[in-house]
Image (cartoon, rainbow, N blue to C red; front, side, top):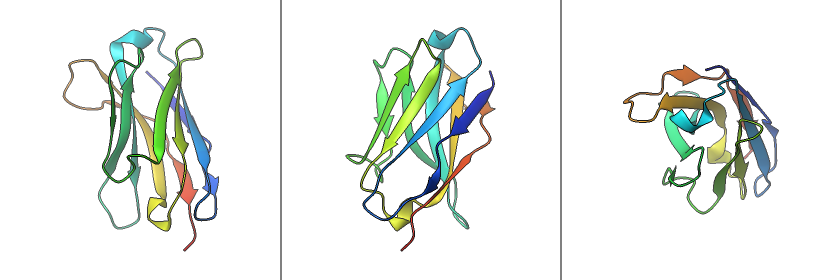
Length: 118
């Protein structure tokens, strides 16, 4: 599956952004879709994940209550709505996918930069 992420940008603290990830795979029901992020000098961090049915959603502790993951099955698109952004959210955000039951995210998009100045 190929993933194309977009929607990053520069936003002031307290602002919002919405990221999008379009998947090329037709069998959307077989994948778990996720967002990760990586800031300069830090390890990659899990942000959120969802199944295409939306029956199972998970968030990283750093974004709970501020970020919302959602999906549009018809458009094969996963969204990440980011509210109350903080300078600590500055990172490259990556869309990823893994097969349901798989151990690792095998498919990755190219990343989109989110910058929240301090």
